[in-house]
Image (tube, rainbow, N blue to C red; front, top):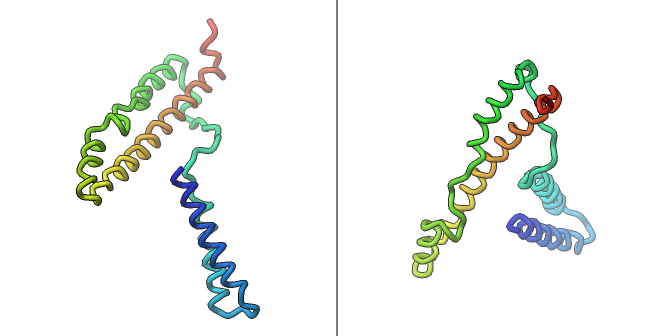
Length: 148
């Protein structure tokens, strides 16, 4: 939701700047510079990938030579990396304390941003482990390890 609000805010600013630029019939150097900056901002925002996109993870060459048992051991070693022991926002005492103290001293509300940052890092760690497990599962399926 936060990225959508950011995109809407940037779009409003860009439209306002474009409206101001188009209000004047002749285009000055400043107006050309503003248009260029707006184009660069749009390219920068489009290059930020906040959300996952579907992709097929590829196996490394050394993984192709593993036996079914070795693939199972590798999967078992990666599974604990998918666990998260971090409490949710409402169960986290740091977030609760930050919100309580923030009612008296508003800069403490920044602890919420700290929690969001750690959630992002935790999600990225879990996603990479899940991708690794998916690669190993595909290899096991290709080697027909599930049969027998």
